[in-house]
Length: 279
Image (cartoon, rainbow, N blue to C red; front, side):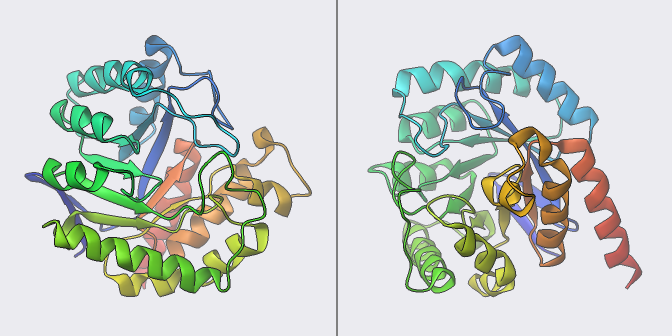
């Protein structure tokens, strides 16, 4: 049975795991500002736990297209109080921190986070070393460019090959730092420096990434590709499309599904898991 390890803890990947998004930012594309205050963030975390979430992913810097970077101190001020509060709840739910900052990674590890989720694939100076030393689980994501420019005419000769080889090189880089494969998850980075057709090709050929040897994390929730599929539906009308995408990703073998809408996704993936057990 597949699993992922963080320090002395392991998570069995016997079914697709739901990662709930908790953006403690004022400007994220879908829920920016809703959970920027610690009380509302903790209330949302409680709700996600009751809804059956497996991992809560705390983000203190928006990575939506065009987002401006924030200072390390600001990111720490947003993330750490929420992380400390979640750890103080005594829940068995894992806590992930969505960051590219080595300083935030180090602080998150000290405060008991289980996973570091980096949209830049641990490419910022110092990030790889800090992540390796943390002994936490790591999610390596692909992004072309940066949030400020990533949707300015992204281009690939072959998007599946390009993303595949980027992830393969990052696996090699973290392995050379002593990170075992059982600490890794991989994210193709839907919507991060990809056009609509690029995203479709990645989803259609998602199974190819299994040959890299690490479980896949897929984040399609409420993204613009879902909106385009639904005749340009606004963000708040993309739930059903997001659920369909989550089911497709799970059926293609994704082990982590990163979402805004926890309860509906948990229910949908329970149906997928039940079918798998019956076969």
